[in-house]
Length: 244
Image (cartoon, rainbow, N blue to C red; front, side, top):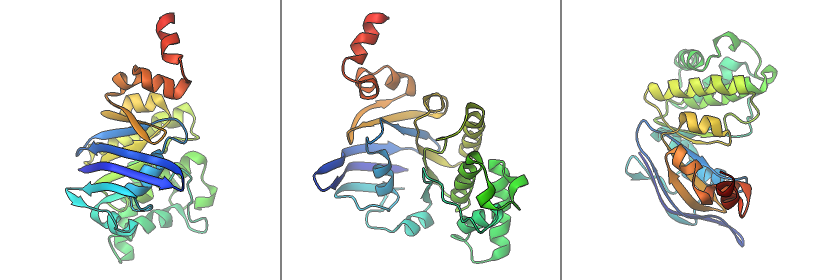
């Protein structure tokens, strides 16, 4: 469904993403992990059209999306969420979700119906009349997910949708994400909550300093010495092996 080849982004002298190749197949949940500053969000921004790649190819359903604007990519069926949630504070939860639905319809009744359907999927039906500015952190995360889902995506890019949540809230959102995949939506996510990564992902890619250093099943990636050192520092893998 998504194929990225030789994707590269520079900011002045900083090589933020370096020659990355990856793919996401239909109906998979694929995760992208790595330390802070590894280049994960930059990669997402390029894939979704918010940043222009310096080199490389991005294909969605076998067609290039390089050079397309985010709203054009959204209309093709690929949409992203943002790590820092920014709801429209003057609108209700329902109206916020409707903003996403308006990407596919100009009819208020149709947008409202779609928003109500999506709210049920993400567990927000009881909050639809509430002002978005009064939502908790967990509520805002669900709203961000709901607004993206209301665009009726084929591929959903989730950028740290679990950041700032407590363990019970994380368990709840994991269940929601699995339910979204069961409805036929493919999911590509950035996440730091490793328990969730292990629980959700069919496959995992690991970035460090802009380079892809590992890929595979979550369990195989977690045991990779390069991955251990990327998170815990030089010599950590050897020290863990000696202590085993």
